[in-house]
Length: 447
Image (cartoon, rainbow, N blue to C red; front, side, top):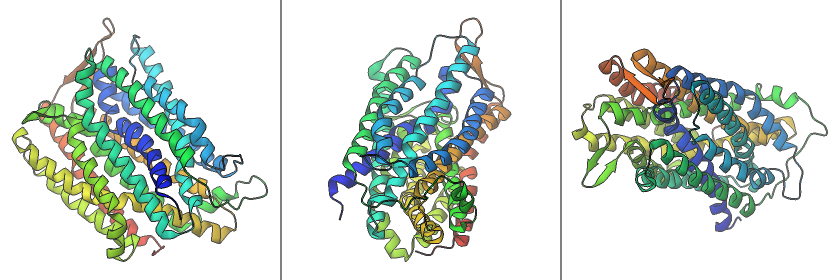
């Protein structure tokens, strides 16, 4: 039976990766790159698409490499222990805006973003794989997964809520604020990742193949549960990715800037914070909800239906700051569904890994969990790229002045841009929530 300290240690891993680095990359990066860093909409979309093609190769390779790692620290833990500092440093550099021209900025952004994706993969794939070797008990796996999601959402809540106040505290230009916050948050991410590596234990030894083979890669595509769960994972991250990527634009252009209510500054990070704290609470309740529903698959399906309904409802809320609390209520109710299903996804990957070991005779836990990380990055970044591209088509134009280097944003069709933003936050995610419901109907493991 794992100690509470180990469960907290495991939660710190996703508090660092999901609650800090990935949360900021998902919600702040599209707006940061177009409105502060000075990339064009086309450059921002292309950057995220290129990074995804990069991840298609690196994620499964990292999973296979992690499965074959042997060290005094175990199979997966050393990647967290020695990857913690590079993760924090590169994240900080990614939020720094160099004093360069348009071409120099483009090169810097592409280099740092691809490097960030590589180090994130090197840390997060082994982190996810840890769940498969810490315990053989299915109920305890659910508990670890629940702690993981609570850690991610709790830190996401703290990060997003404090962001505008920390910006004010730092002062100076927006580019200076993001650079300083990048250093602070990068340091916290490094500490959390290192603590996770040191506090967790690997109790089960993977059943390794005698020599390296490409057979595990082929086995994946003959593994029906893996195929369906990976598609479900991609859809969940498209659902979240659209909402996070467009939230900054929603507050800035649809509601005409931050909304202040009784002294509370509601900017785009605070707006999504209401969802984070809801996800944290209901992520902790996910095991009970699953027990009530009777199976992980049914619980996941009910949560996805809730997300679809509330996303559609959001579209019909008037685009006016005086309805801010109605919008917040819709975000909270949607986040109940996200909180319920988020721990289930990773627990179900552990089920798929067990299924693969039984079927093939050797462990491919790292490889299977790498697909979960790839789905996360694929869905979030492609949705971010689509947000940038679709806003460009609607009439949003951004870039750097070639003489002064200052960021310039022009809206050529404000009604079309606002309607696109509103749809990207509501109707687009609803489509992917319904796809999740359909794919869960086909998912064959009935635990």
